[in-house]
Length: 441
Image (spheres, rainbow, N blue to C red):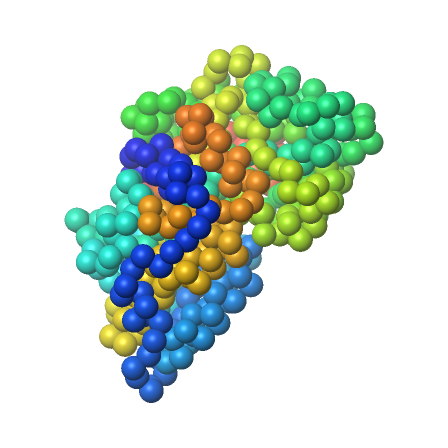
């Protein structure tokens, strides 16, 4: 299993340097100016497969702005359908002879397209990427993809709701154990607000929640690797694994306070930002990518942050004080079904994101993306990114398990959904997880 080394260097370089530099931005690449003008009268059409549906409208607006500045290039943003993995979508597009020019993939899928993606090693942004950001994308010594976003996740809390529930200024550091979290849930409900929203999408349950059981096995990356290897070999005993059972005990507790516990599979993703933003719940398990939606419902004046997912009642247990953070999306450029002009246009679009003032604004301010480039001095002006920044500064980050098999979240997501709905019990879930891993080649 590939890993991202020097995680703290990745995220601290991206965020802390941004703080030092302040919130201003300059176009510090003279070539970017030439990138915004066109010498050709022939229009080049490129496609961009987007696997971050929560910023679909923002990316469409960015594409229009890019075309405004590069009148001979049009960018068609294509969303990955809900319920389909980006790997599945890209694979089907290649099979139909209609591969996207730019494909946004999960980190673990980049290597699968190494023979179809363009070598980007000589692009200027390679030298401006923060330390470690290109580890996953570097295959056989070649940089095969562009690091699009640094993200993190945990329990998002609405501070206005929590302040009222606690009768004062809520301190997220007060949540150190499962009992602390349940106490917070009880206080929120005593104040007349529901405690928690659990979004039942498979990618959230098995792409984000379940992997905490892997990441929390040890602060030593080698031990986490060994745990995954043991799962594949059928040697891991989840029934007696303290971390896994601790996480699922927390999930059981969450189910008791779920806003939709009577019909847990009913909510869509869109319900989450609404109920947390309008203060209908105190907590929502999700990541900072949700901010663009939350802010459309925000009644708390931007007062939000993260608390970790505790796995025990010992505040000293690894994982109880940290949230997963890492580079979560990479963009590759097709070289097999898109011609040279399209490849060049795609390179120009990526350079526009990194070096032009309007591209940086689209990436950071409009898409609320934490960039993986040290030359970008903009800091996302949203509370969730700032909360992640605080965890990074304090060294309280876990590995974001971004290189899991591409079908992990779809197959085990279905199992987690059965568990959430009460269709299966802990024993059945364990059997599904262990069977899945033994089938992974």
